[in-house]
Image 1 (cartoon, rainbow, N blue to C red):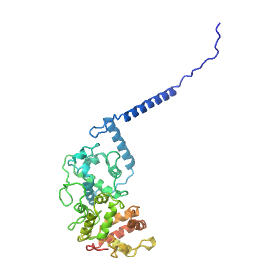
Image 2 (tube, rainbow, N blue to C red):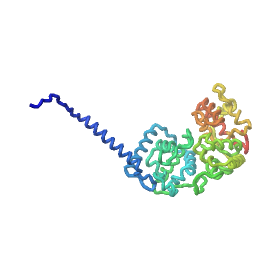
Image 3 (tube, rainbow, N blue to C red):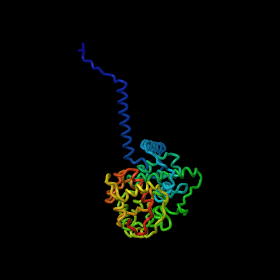
Image 4 (cartoon, one colour):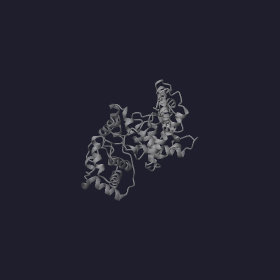
Length: 373
């Protein structure tokens, strides 16, 4: 009789979850191999002449919008109906955005129309996004789309006017209407981008007109030395501004000198006329004597001693002066030597003190051309 083998091999049957796990590993391996083949063979056509697959577009747009809404929900929205804010946003849109997006309601640049994704007509931006989401989008930009982040780091005060302008376009011009794309002086818009001296007057005014918005400084009669320094700082990227850095980037030394000389010779422009006397008096005390208990020196020790390196504050808009002091108070505009001096002062001032001293300087008559106040 054959010898009996008493050794019995026991085979354990896999559980349901183990089988599912192995199947998942197998599918993951197949996916990874397939993805590697897909990438290395160059199968996907990245040409801008070839549209994305529909499901690719759907995924990208969903990821984009969910990312924006997840980050924009806590952003506080200021008053977007302020006329000065809208006017300033319109002028910067003309210079910084229209080259790709076109003016709302008008045909876009044929080169921009060949981009993928196609830069949208922003007259309809509020159809898809609320103000906080649109602010976040403009401030941060979007990867892989050609949409840059805002050039001036920390200058959210410059982004809100853009949102305000797009909101005004959306509310005042329903789909199908022709958008009024004239500037504040009624001249038609016939070019995009910044041009030396000609484009400066769109925001800052000229010998006949004041600034387009109370959020923009009047440059008329400012010391040429100060204007030259400011433009060189913008050009070098030392002074942050999404408005001025692009404008100054292409300026030559000769351009800067011509600009500074021209504006230093412009006559003063009349500004605001009604102010709260008590607020002006409080501001005068700060401007003349400082705040010794808060280590705030007298403003006139620099801005009233004839030094051409300091700007004239007399007659500047209260809104503009407040905005700059708030920037310093909140840690902005401290990347230049003079800015670092003001950052210390701004941090030591309360919001009310900032309002008071701004009202005082705004109540004064603007200095004569070339003054060094």
